[in-house]
Length: 227
Image (cartoon, rainbow, N blue to C red; front, side, top):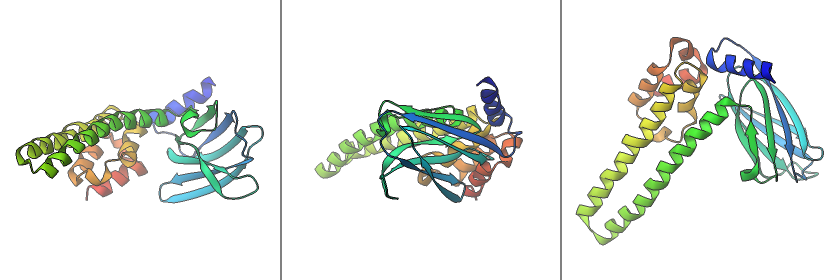
């Protein structure tokens, strides 16, 4: 296990590795499906693979140059029709395990991917701000219905502050923190702010990255959005 963790760390922090592999190992209690569908989003390319499940256990392996998004769907027994998502994660070089006390999406846990852990940590923090924003938006709508212009404008400013002084800065904070590894390059591509970010925002985040990680496909995608 230690050599695998070292390879994963080397890949994320130095970026010196080219094409590598990741191995997926799953053991989910109560998983009655005999097959799973692995949907991998590699840049602009989507690949689909059907794998077998035996007594809740399954395995899968693939090559990768950079971390990419993977979704795992349950397939109805004897058919190619999906019946819900088992889990989703960012794949990276090394061994990734999927476990859970039940096949419910919220009960399944993914371990072994630093990129996945950091992304989900960021998204969880972002979701808290969004929840507060949505709660305040209800109040804003009430003021609109009441034609209370003064209160509406006050709340509108607070809503804008949540976006421009909390959500966007949070993303930039993460990019700056991980500017010297793959995480800083990929985060702008997986955030939920895409339509709210300006070209200047994308350029700022691109410029945060070290020269080495500006060469990654994720960084190049961020730079393209700044044009």
